[in-house]
Length: 164
Length: 180
Picture 1 (cartoon, each protein chain N blue to C red):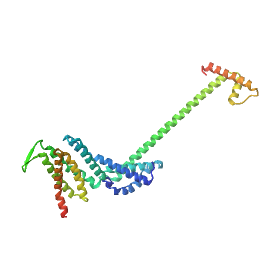
Picture 2: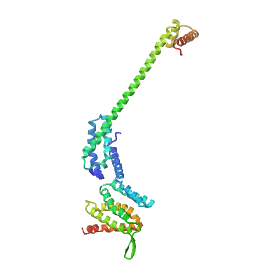
Picture 3: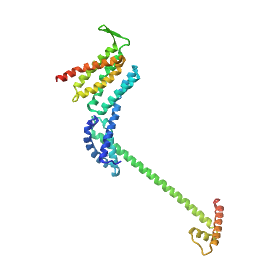
Picture 4: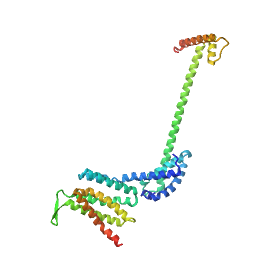
């Protein structure tokens, strides 16, 4: 490393061969396999980028491992942040669903409330419309009944809730 | 990212060279005060630009290349200090008579300070372990580019005198190398 810091390119291959397996195993011991390869490569490139700044008085191994440790710490922080973000998103989605469910339950209760004020024949007609079935009566008669039932439902809803 | 072994090695080599260039740029900081001194001595804009560019290019190239070239930078800068500083210290319009002709002090000081630079470089180069010629070439070119900023006050003759003085100062080491 001291030779590389001095600009001796012939030391590159030796440094690379000594450093890469060492960094790989050092990072693999501290991070899950899905992340360790990337982080080890990042650390290796960072070490070569700073090779010219290396002080020959220092121990090369501890210098390189200090850089790798910093990268490991950064990767850990990054994954913790990612996990926190994901759980926050999941929480937001869950609360959105809960709100929708609450609204639909309220609407259902309000609809049952309004339906209770209608005549049984209107309720039967509305049930047929909702389920898509046809009672054994002529089509024109059913259409007329459906029209009347819907009109009454609308009036009842407006009387109870003040809106369509 | 997950690069293959070959591309990782290639990228590491590229990044190492880029790091060396960045380091060379940072190591070239002495060029700034030298050029500043040239501006202070009212050198022409063209001279400051060209001289500054040459000195910067030399220091960056030597620092980036490393090894002996890099080790030649500081001795070169220090050897260039006498011709950079001494001629500027001579009082303006001060003359002396030598051999029946009138000489400006600053013109005389350039070969003298060049001689000091040459002797210094010769002495340092003789102590170099391995590639003394490479060291001498590197340091002498940096010293010449540095000293030119000081000897410019005496015009082209000042720079020529400094170079001649420098070569004369290097003679003893050349003679010694020839004897060996």
